[in-house]
Image 1: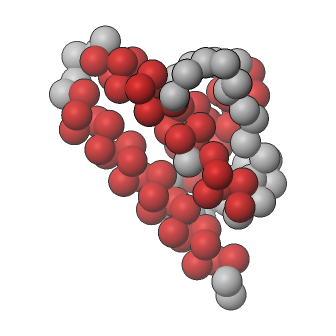
Image 2: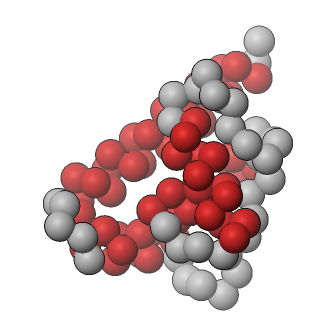
Length: 95
């Protein structure tokens, strides 16, 4: 699978992250998708690798601290969204 199914919660985050990873962009979406790559790959998503770029979770937090938002809250919100997506995708695939 190359894109996220639009009826799943967080599909826009995953679709954007997959596109950003494929284009070599280091965005919030790309990094959160990279963090969830093993789980997403198990669900059939084609998640490009970020070899040699260091842990995605560290880079995401660094990226978030550069902004004006509360980095910790934003980080946790992104984690929640990707987990919701993965759970919904797992549920949908088990039907």
